[in-house]
Amino acid sequence: MSICSYMKGITLIVTEQIEICDVPMVDPEKVDRVKRALTDEETNDRLSHVFGALADPTRLRIIDALSREELCVCDISAALGLSQSATSHQLRTFRQLRLVRQRREGRLVFYSLDGFWTKIVIFIF
Image 1: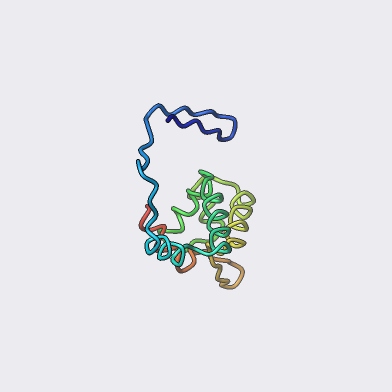
Image 2: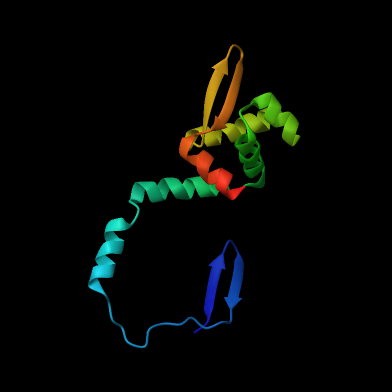
């Protein structure tokens, strides 16, 4: 059996065969364990938005920079060669997804990765 999938206007044809069971036999205990362990819909929805945001190369560069240390918008912009406006726009997306946190120090606002995401990003980079 060949696979043909359609993604964003690109048709991919995979010629390797997919192995399936010769006998349809379900292990009810395994199925029950997996069903109980599956991530809830709200978490899945949030994760899909997070991965969507991380699919942008500019946003990945910002996350990479913030994985190194806490930075203000000016520092991020200078390090990555972006305008402050573009940087702020991307950070707004990250704030909405709770990927970053901000800390105000006088007239400066510093950004860092938010808790859980710090560990994930450090693992990736």
